[in-house]
Image 1 (cartoon, rainbow, N blue to C red):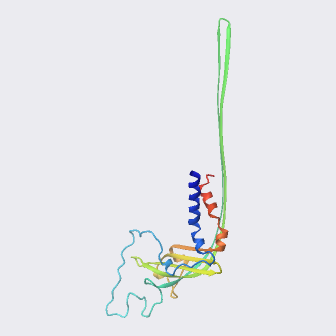
Image 2: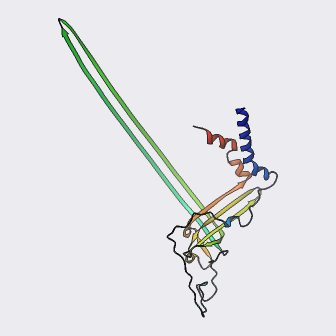
Image 3: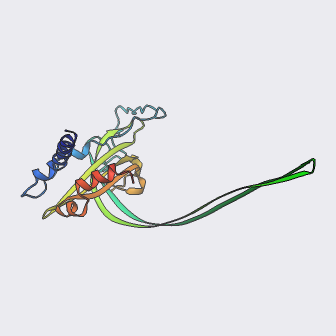
Amino acid sequence: MTTRLLILALAGLSLAGCQSKLDEFGRPPVLTPIGTGLSAPREALPSTFGSFQSRHSYHSTWTPASADLFQDPRARNIGDVLTVSILINDKAQFDNASDRSRSQKSSLGFDFGYGVSGLKDSATADTGIRSGTETKGQGTIDRKENLSLSVAAVITEVLPNGNLLISGSQEIRVNNEVRVLNVAGIVRPRDISRRNTIDYDKIAEARVSYGGRGRLTDVQGPTLGQQIFETVAPF
């Protein structure tokens, strides 16, 4: 009975994991609907953010909605679009080594003798304790990342201090493989250039995800059974 329940449980997990693959059986992967990337999950804002009060200017050609007398093309309101330039060229190399050893030795000995009416006897005892530990560790990290691309993002929220929360996604399908790019973060309006672009290094709390899904990704990844085995395996 227990074996049958275990088989049914594994079969249910397999069907649940293969549901997305069965939906795409015989056809290319389906793109996500437009607007899916506009909702970026985030934590609650800290209390240090003060309330932003807009300035009102009556009977004037200048309005708080624009920084110049002429039209400003830079995004500033919810729903406006701006271009994010992502240029990542990072290289990190670390080499750490540690060596630790410890040795301890203790010894104890005594002699005992007696004599009564011509009888003599003696006893000798020695006790020794030895302990030692040794630990060696070595780690090497050699990483290089190079990513250069641009993606359009949408302003989804204006924070109380005037900063903008942006989020955007881009999907490209070539044959049976989909490349997905997601970007989200917080930007200052002053960092947006007059060409309505902003660099990646000026985005606070930046979240960039570049990956994909499709036939090649499924083949390169481990199977569901292997993932379950690696999760429950004690060693």
